[in-house]
Length: 212
Image (tube, helix red, strand yellow):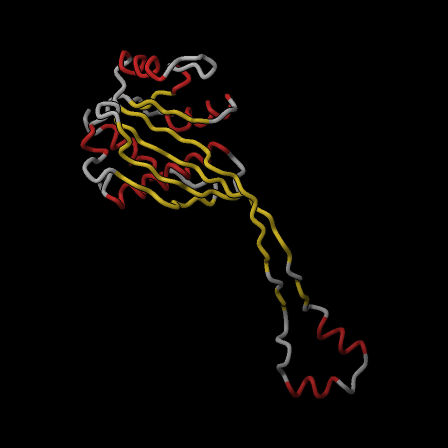
């Protein structure tokens, strides 16, 4: 049982990415690893204002993972519980870890996509070009009609910066945090999968999770 949480986190490595997501930065407690904590019951918390989005995110992370429990089952977002009261609930329910996710920023980005020329290389075929001056429109059109130019254009995308944290309730401290950047987001659930995939890869890279 003690390795169950590690196996569940590693299972995210097999998920497909629903958006272009990458890790921007991360930090881990140098004295603690995820494996050392031996988490047995972990609360999943999505810090978003929209309740529907909160449930989608938490359900996505907790899906088919008995160790993970959604926060909306234990902590009512509309209630006015104090920090001490919330911690008391988690202690009474025997939680030993928390994974939280929150949106840090949402920014628009505009990029320019250069134009492309498809067809005959302009400036080549010297003999043909020399001879073309003596021909009419029909010959010119027959040679160049299959060739065209796609003009450049500007495209706008939205960048979502999301912070993912892992807390140890036994030690009452943050043991890992990372920020991811996602763009071209079309599906919230798939984006959560992509974020978790990036997080797990980074945890393996920094030694928080076993590399294999």
